[in-house]
Length: 112
Length: 111
Image 1 (tube, rainbow over the protein chains, first blue to last red):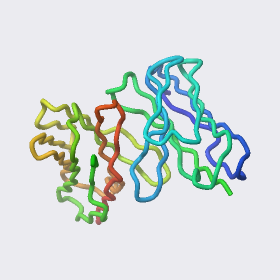
Image 2 (cartoon, rainbow over the protein chains, first blue to last red):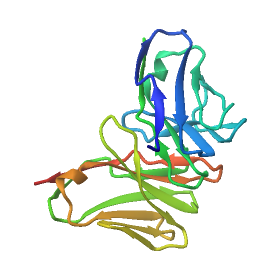
Image 3 (cartoon, chains in turn cyan, blue):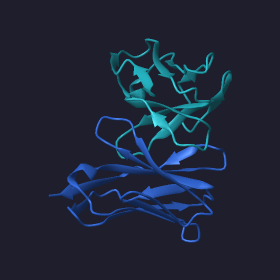
Image 4 (cartoon, helix red, strand yellow):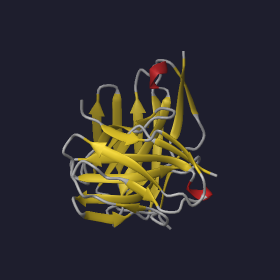
């Protein structure tokens, strides 16, 4: 089954404790991205990747890191999480940038 | 400033009627626009993509229009059903190749 998976689905952590949210797709997509979604706001892109070893900042990259060492994986790293990073995070992939995006199930992160 | 707007208030529609959702944008010249459906607690699901040279696109009970002069896209669901109740998001690509999203419109179809 074609899908995008994210782990963990739920995470409660404390300020400053490094964490990684994994994202994996099995569709051989070149384009992957991370979004955060907050109430009343649209999805905001954090980082995106056009292909392996090619990543770029989105709209709200501060406090986040990503890597794309393999085509299927695109982990999101929070080196020192802060409460303002409490949000619902989605990973997405698409064949190319302008194509339809496939989203993961989301990761709800709470930073206390 | 650049922005993309969707009705923030929920849209209540009687079952069987046509639901029309609006997506307006300013200061963008997108080559295409996409519509997605999002159910509570889940990731958005792609519905339709319409390009700037297309006036209208259809898929089953769904229809999207794209007016680059008015800077507006309309999303229609005909013969609406309670199962169509969800939040609908529009998205367009800006000049920096980032996908910019509206906050979504919540659609409620009443039996």
